[in-house]
Structures are given as structure tokens and as C-alpha cells.
Length: 84
Image (cartoon, rainbow, N blue to C red):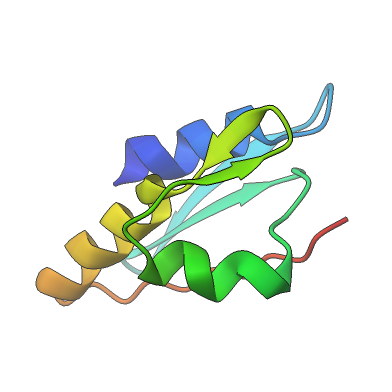
């Protein structure tokens, strides 16, 4: 789960972007300076089992798998993303 979120942060970050990991009161925050996710497809991404092709790279199953893992282990997952 953490690997996927960090990998996405790296893959979709800006050139010379940053990824910050913060652990505070048992809450892990992964913050990046990436391109964000278009709100039109965000809900589809976390609720689908199909891969979406976006530009030259695939966006898809990873977030859905992370969400499923969190749901099954009663882990609160919050994603705040805005397309730049």
C-alpha cells in the first residue's frame, strides 16, 4: 500500500518535485508536488477494476487495490488531490 502511494508520488511528480512522509499520532501522510488527479476520473480510479490509459502511461488498478486493502483492514484512507 505504502509502496504504491510513494511510487505514484514519484511517477506523477513534477521534475525536481518533492515527496514528504510525515508520521504524527499514528497518521501517515504522503505529500508530493505531483500533477494531481483530475476529479472527473478520481472516483472511477478508486472504484474500478479496469486500467485507464492516460497519455502514455497507465493509471488504474493501484489506487483501487490500496483502497480495497485499507477498507478490509479498517484503515482510514484520505486522498486530497487536485489536477494542476
